[in-house]
Image (tube, rainbow, N blue to C red):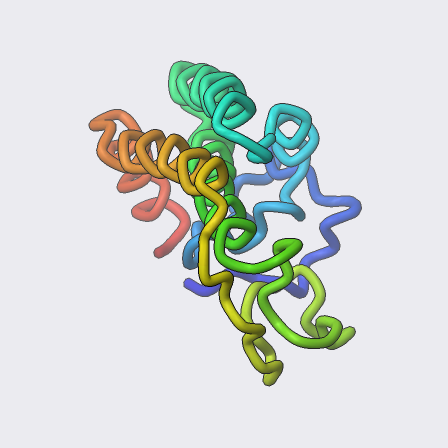
Length: 164
């Protein structure tokens, strides 16, 4: 099932109401789903390889803790933050100032990823090496998270109960 952006994310506690959560595609909802956003976001840093090592380790620890608690929504949100560490570090490596698209995000598309009709800005001819390394650190942890048998088991159980 697609991620539901019509929910009132200011009032829904997804720990109490996991039935409202959708895995969606990629990083959908990563900066909306509470209380997980508030728990994970303070650890999310990708400015350089050192920050990425520290950040990915902290987020990994949260992911493992969520899995131990059988809290798939939390584990999936941690997975999404690892994925977003990769994509944002790559964006900053590839685009000056991290800005990928020309112009502001349309008001009705805020919180959703994508070009939304905007042109992609030119890529750096020389990607930032430290950001490339930071991205690789997050990519490794993101891949590990998706491959964890316990993550896969809980994801399958979640989708069987609440829908794909």
